Amino acid sequence: MKKYSLLFILSVLWGCNSDVVIHYQLPQPVVLDLYAESYFSTIDLEGVEQVGTITATYLELEYASKADTLQMTRRFEIDKSRGYLKNSYPPELSWRIPEVTVKALDQRVLVTEGFENYDSTVAQIPMPERWRNQLTGEDYDRYLIRAEKHRWEMDHLLSGAVPEKGNITELMRSRGRLNFALIKIDSVVTNGFHNLDSRRCLGYTVYLTENESFPYFIWEQHVNSKIGAERFIPYRSGHKGEYQTAYWVALDPATGIPCQEREVKKGVHTMVNTSTGDTATFESRITLERLYTVKK
Image (cartoon, rainbow, N blue to C red; front, side, top):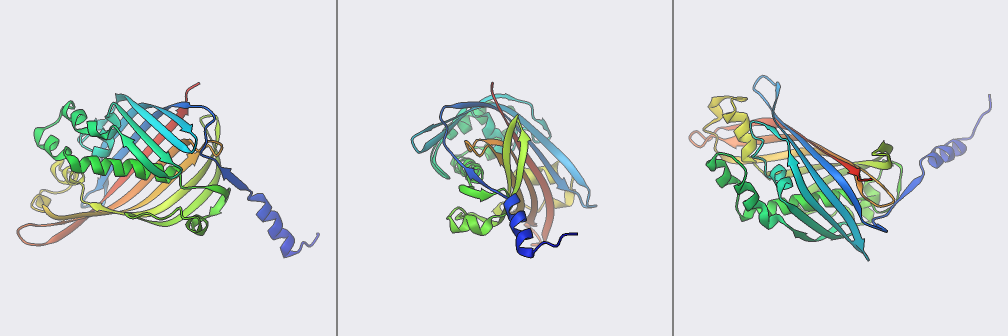
């Protein structure tokens, strides 16, 4: 058997992991169908996961570029959500806004348009009035715009030449791609090419930690849907949530247009009994998946 030097072996292995160059330029507009699906569940007192709501939304998207500016416009088509709170998750309800436009320079979002119509969209959706009152207001506009920017930033995280497979956290940090105010990026890992939508798409996963105010609809699902226990009903203060998230993206490296996105979020939620001051925690599981299909 031939003996090979360590240097030779390492050079072969390194050569197998070639760099991929990411571009965010479109020679012409591209129109896609988008299917956005989400699963929301909580963990009961016995540790059993209980699925509460499944949302499903169909949209049409158009991506275009003008000089260095990228623009994405999406139009709502149909909703097929089901479950106890199918009309109560603000990020999912925002998919039903008739039209939303995002303009960006590479990773940085410059303009968002359409979210001013969120309240009027919610006003047309059947739901208990007490929920509608909690789901509308200027605070939600800011929250939904932040969520839209977050998706864009995750989809446009890579820049230039990156290894096809490997941990690229320090590489992205050195290029100034991981500077976020409200989230902490733990690592970024590329995981090779995937054949999706007849496209050869580069996949990567962003592992991150998110902190947010306690979402009332998770409490509503866990307590009022009787998935949890009625003893939690008095726990109406001190609400907060923290998520450990794996955000997977597959994109077409020639254009930067996504092929698929998947967010898997493990949430730990804290709540305080307003009478006794006791603290209780429970977990949630959220899976968000978005499939992009280029229209022929």
